[in-house]
Length: 182
Image 1 (tube, rainbow, N blue to C red):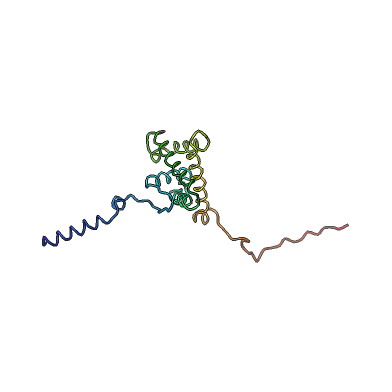
Image 2: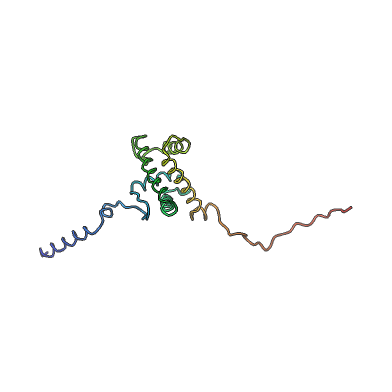
């Protein structure tokens, strides 16, 4: 092979690699692009783990399978004001710090029973910061809303029919019972 061609090809490969963002090369990227709030890929995965704990995978798809964490982020990004969005992010950071301090590890590696107990303690106790309580309430509400409005739920769990429903033409009528009039 000609040395000049090899050097030129090497320069093209290195120049092309410089044009790609580091996140794409490393494979670390958010699954969703948001306009108003900024979340890291780690925070996005944490939110997915929280949603999966709320609606786990059983014989039906769980929250991760239906990507409900993306629904939560979209709703917060589009439908909440700037103050609520900032408090949501603060609550997410507080949740992460509290979970790491509480069990000496990331929330994703906890046993399922510990995850459920931790979320239940946030829901029932008022000892946590306000932002954390509000964060969890939003995540739970939007996860359940996203699940009940998902295509899977509306087509497989409950069969949705428009009102007034079906028109059944051929329905047998019971014979009338004669009453004696006085």
